[in-house]
Figure 1 (cartoon, helix red, strand yellow):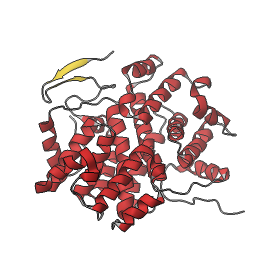
Figure 2: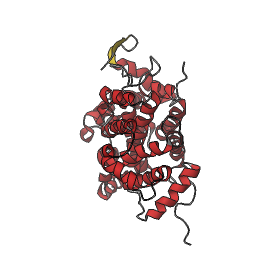
Figure 3: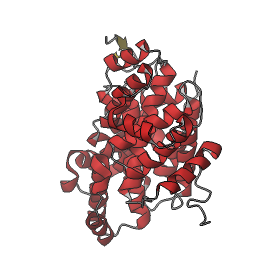
Length: 171
Length: 196
C-alpha cells in the first residue's frame, strides 16, 4: 500500500465501509467472512490478520473458534444465518455465477436481509481482490502471531489505514 | 426460483438480481446506486487504477481489465471495458478482440504479452506470479510500476466480476448497449451514478 498511495486510499475506504460497522452484520461476522474467503484462497497473510481481528471481536482468545470456522463452519456454533451467508461467500470465492437463487433463499429463510446478502457478496469479492494483490506481488507475511495480535488490536480501535506502526517496538 | 422479466431498454429477457436494486441500471452502476458509500470507494479505485498516474496507457489498462474479466467469464465487465478499450484504441480497436480471443497471437508488444500473462496468473492463482514471469516482463521493458498496476488491475477485476455476477445484476445482451458506456468511461471516467 505504501508503494501506491493513490490506490491505497480507496482500498482502505472500501475496507472501512465494509468491515468497520455493526449495521446488519456485526464487525466480528464481517471479519469472519473475510477470513473464511481468504482461507479458501489460501492467502496466509490475509486469513491470519483478519482472523486475528475476528477473534478480537468475538472473544476468541486462543484463535480456536476462527480456526474451526475456516475448517468446517457448518459444524461450529455459528448462527444458521451466518452459515448460509458463508455458503454464499464460498460460492463468490469460486466465481460470481456460482451464487444460486437457492443459496440466497436459504439465507433469507434464516433472516438475512438484502443488505446482509449484498455485504456478504462484496466482502467476499473484495477479499478475492486483496488476496490476489498480496500474493501476486509476493509480499512478506510475518510468522510471529504476536505481530498479528498487535496489529489486530490497532484495527479494532482505529479501523483500516496504511499508517501506524506495523511491528511493535521491542520491550 | 428464478424470476424473469423483459427489459425494454436493453432488449433482453433476464433473471432478476438476487437483491432489490434500482431498476434500469446495469451491472456495477446498479450496485453503486444501491450503496453510494461502497460505490464511491469502488469508483475511486477504478478511476485511480485505470485513469491515474501510470506509464501504462489508459487503453492498455482497460485492455488488461477486459482481458481479466473475460477470463472470469463476466459478460458485463468484459463488454463494458472492451468497449472502453476499443474507444481508446481508436483505429487499432480490433486489437481488443484479438487479445480477448488469444493474447499470445494478438498484435500487441512483447511487453504487453508478458503483462497479460501476469494478469492471467493473478486471475487463476496469484501465487503463480513467479520470479521467472516477472523477470520476463522486466526484460521486455516493464517497470515495477507497470507490473504492480497489472497485478492490481487483475486483482481488482476479480473483485468487480464476482460482485456484479454474484448479485446477478442486469447484463445487457445487445452489444450496441456497451458502446456509449465505453465512450463515457474513456472520456469522463468513473463517476458514480446519481439515482434517482
